[in-house]
Image 1 (tube, protein in one colour):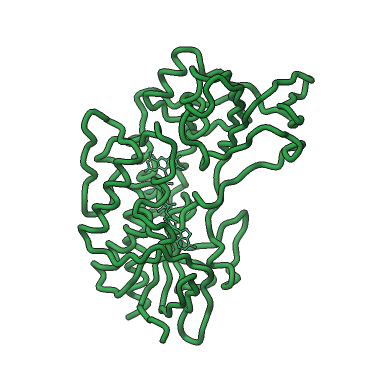
Image 2 (tube, helix red, strand yellow):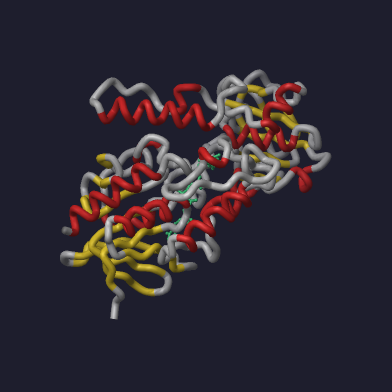
Length: 351
Ligand code: FAD
């Protein structure tokens, strides 16, 4: 018999856990299905030196402050995994893993959630699948001809494997800057960005960014003009390793090349640079394929929503992903509020 519950949450990263916390408080019966064998979502797979861009207290999910990491103002990814593991145990969240959700289908008055371990039936779904499983690489002429190693942010672990090599890092966001800084003194590095990289002032970190997101949320709630999201402040948070590499003059960006050759890159003026490896820090797309059978309207890889609720299917909510599901909803501290709102709306729908 197909197991039934009121709500299936797809994804057991931070967004799925925040949804679970608020569904529990709303008195809704639910299960969280997560594709990973272990807790921690994407944080299990990031590079070794990654640091949060906010101190622990500003990186907390609802109900429980992230403890500080001894000796580190900005915690590392392992600390976040520990925190999320503890979080789901502390609140006894019903996470089943590894369970990969393949598709959500309308089935009479219910939704049928097909997984690799069987189907579930539910009255509503909260999709919290993140972006890590959908790395984005731009279409650059010659990319398939290049014979060196090509990686995406998701594949990068540490500078050890590139020591002494000629490496091109592509991308002027936080990942590109942090990975370029990581590699700067051990490789022959070329860092390329589409536009001149914009470093936030050194005193600005995730705390300020979150204040910006809060101000934006208030403006939107009160029907005032959109004050702009986090990105309107600029891009790169000068976390200590980035600041150190930049101040040592090791983080000089070149403009984007126009094509790849078999052995490296070529710029518009004909300049060429040989490379053993290219690391694409070029972002992600939302992992929305489980919702494809519902045929929900959207554009640019998004699904049209009102807050977290899918416009075409009020039984489906989307949590995390980016500002389009709520200001700062793709951050640890920012996901709490949209999670609460999604749980409230789902509870209203069920009653
Ligand atoms: P994820 O952590 O990716 O979790 C999604 C879960 O869903 C995963 O376990 C995945 O396996 C599962 N899943 C996916 N598809 C399916 C499926 N079909 N069936 C079942 N399960 C599925 N935020 C901050 O607050 N502070 C920071 O300092 C910060 N730094 C960042 C640095 C980088 C490099 C990146 C990429 C992001 C950073 N973020 C930061 C943003 C954000 O906090 C993380 O991306 C976070 O991992 C998003 O959490 P999530 O729960 O939405 O997604």
